[in-house]
Amino acid sequence: MEWEAPSILLEAIPYGEGGLLATVLTARGLWRGLAKGGASRRQAATWQRGNILAARWVARTEGQLGALSAELVRPVAALAMGAPETLAILDAASALVVGALAEREAAPEVFAGLIRLFAGIDIPGFALPELCRWELVLLRELGFGLDFSGGGDNDVLAYVSPRTGRAVTLSQAGEWVDRLLPLPGFLLDGREASMADCQDALRLTGHFLTRDVFGARHCPLPPARALLYETLCERQRGAEKHAD
Image (tube, rainbow, N blue to C red; front, side):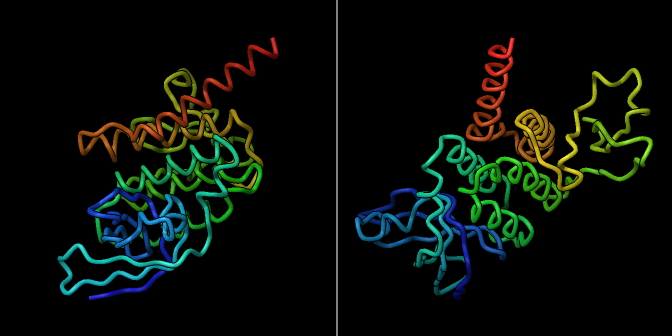
């Protein structure tokens, strides 16, 4: 069995002498394979987390680990190195996919969204809002999509029920407002997102990822994703303190 496809490298662990146990995401799902010589100086730049690759997977039978080879299409890892936040976004998204998706099950929307996120990761102001939108795609493809229907011109959607995942309008919130999760408007349309908006969005998606995806497996939210949110909260607190 073999396939060739655009892929995203999510993880590469030293394996044997000079090899790597690599995990890639394709439209056909999450696949693992042995990249022979992947840890060598000649190939090291290719096998970096986040890189977009033209990959080839080969095995005698479908159940085998298989061998992976690849050509570098876009050096996402190198592009993300320019800013700590960008690298943290790359790490968080990669960890979510590795932890949430079942191996070899097709996830075309997750793949397409992650390609978009990583392809533009070095565009100023793009990556963080795009990560928030992509996490909604991840939840939906895993069967835990949030319901943002409802609302209208005179009663906008402003919150999400942490129990049901359904959006709630301003008038519906009432006395329950303190128990609801804020729904930032950029998740509903194409408006720009502030840092506070992204913080609210990650709190929202993080709640359902923690409860429905990782909680169902008795696992915590991946540390890289938790750290990204904590870092943003600390930055927001620092900005507010400085403004005072």
